Image 1: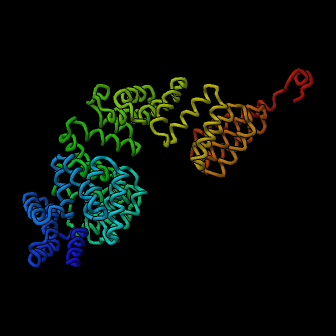
Image 2 (image 1 turned 90 degrees about the vertical axis):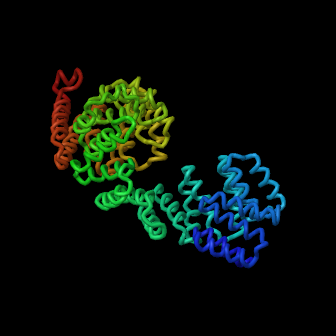
Amino acid sequence: MPQLIEAILRADDGSDLTQMQSLCEQGLREQPASSVMWALRARYHARRNAYAARDADLARALSLDPQCSEALSVRAIALYDADEKQEAWALLREARQRSPAHYGLLMAEGYLLINDRRLEDAIASWTRAAQMRPAAAAPHCYIGSNLHNAGRYEDARPYHQRAVALAPNNGGFLYDAGNNYRRLGDLQNAIAMFDRARAILGEENAIQHNRASCLQALERHADAVEEWTSLLRREPDWDWPLEGKARSLHRLGRADEAAPLWRHLDALSDSGWEGRKEQAREFVRSGDPELAEQALQGLDPMTSGDAQLLFVAGNAQRDQSNWEEALAYYLRGYEIAPDNDFLPGNAADALTRLERYDEALPLSEVAISLDPDWLKWRRVRIDALTHLGRGAEAVADADRALEKWPDSGPLHAERINALTGAKRFEEALAACDRLIGLDPDYRNWALFSRGEIYGHMKRHAESAMAYRQAAASYQQNGKANYQDLSLRRAQAAEEAAAAPRGFLGRLFGRK
């Protein structure tokens, strides 16, 4: 009998309900008076949501043994799900006192704890359950899935790996592992998990959608479109695949095919503009802000009450350098969604472009407080401090940020500006050299900045040379406007170098 019980638990763990039922029936034929067998068949009925059959088998099990731990573990979950939480906990505590190391009771305790939002306590119970049955996969999957739900994807990874290794034929465990890999950005492993889950569970909507999302993230847009097309045959009005397919079509350059899908999303959405909003977002991402603005024609974002619509409308104006219009959208969005860091952060950025640094500074600080890990907001704050004449603070900010983002070219550039603002010119020149070595894309900018720094130091000949180097670099990169600006600056520096200096210079032509 112990071997048969273990086989039933293994079938449950592997989500092989057919095998589980067969083994339960075998056990009841051989041991009709076994409370454990009736309890295990009650567990089988619970797995397939056959609650009347579950309750009948539980009643039979408890009539045979009112203290049957297997039956009480199922009963506790049933009570909790029926919103009889106090009764569930009372029953479970009493049963745990009698059988503190029972696997089913520990699993049930974890279930009640996680539903009471006590994650760490639930993990402790499931960890103890795993110690009772080292071959069981379910405790590992439950720990992994709930760490995943808490946003702790890296912590969840080893639990999902263990669950899949112990129950390689459980499609649900494979699907959960795939989702965690997807969140970690390990998209190839995610697709592999989804493929294995699909081989077991068939064409399930969630598997197909998440697999398609991975393909899209890998820029395999044609494959993603094929996956979503298949899914939409079954679920033609599901907004997520509609949006995903439209997005991939857009990125394949097939915007005309995407257009009816955006319209379909509009028709499905409560607002009536969800599709146009996402279409505009795609135009912004693809560098077509004018088309994004056209997509939003007929809408008034300012009165919409939709913070994301305001964000997209603001981005469309930002990318056309319409800073006042962008700022208005961002600020209105911030009023509606004060917890979204992108709205005050982008508003602060727009204010720096408008040279309204005193207004930009507090908004950049709000954005940093909402998301300390988004570098752009720190750069905006450094820029504002620099232009407000607070160069020393700006340098200190930049130095702190570089401890976390040491390889960020834009951050190094902001630090150079801050050093220049603090009149620490020699350090700024050295920082320009480091930036050229760190990020070749910033070579033009760093050479141009060297010209400016030498100019502040009145070393005009060196300034002219740096500007001419910048002009040559801009020419190589096809940036004619900046090449022309650099040449004009070089000429001005050369004229300054040639001009007589001071009283003796004016008298005797000395330079």
